[in-house]
Image 1: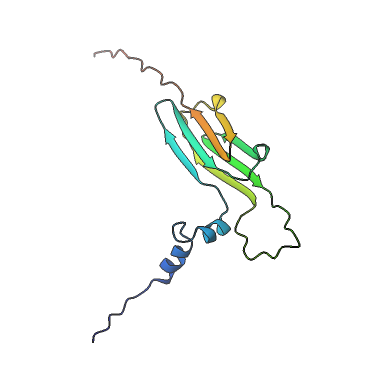
Image 2: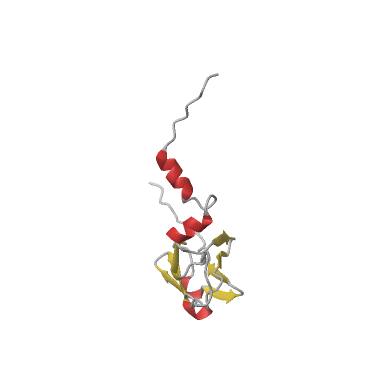
Amino acid sequence: MAMTIFKRDPMKLFESVFNDNVSPFVSSIVAPSFKVDISEDDTAIFIEGDMPGIKKEDIKVSMEDDVLTICAERTKCEEEKTKDYHRTERSWGSLSRSFTVGENVDAENIEASYDNGVLKIKVPKKAAEPKKGKDITVK
């Protein structure tokens, strides 16, 4: 009977432990954050982020240059001393995500709303300026 020997790359094994698809629990401990969906159409960029357990007043959205930043603070609830905790997976602390949205956005008219644990941001695009023609002198 022949035995096949496979070489394992130890770094690949290490990377797979922190892969969100393999272990979302471990990944959230390493980099606590929140998940977002980003889409766009001709008029705007849309960002929706799941932020359960965060109060609206603990969310800050800012724009500097062409980078949109979302910061939030999730506070830790006091653990009841009469309970014996077997596992605590919910993260708490500061959360932050930044997105480069480009220079063609109207930063003055960004809209943000928060309802039922979902943050929705609409980043309008600037209207495209019509291209002006140019007369060329024939020499």
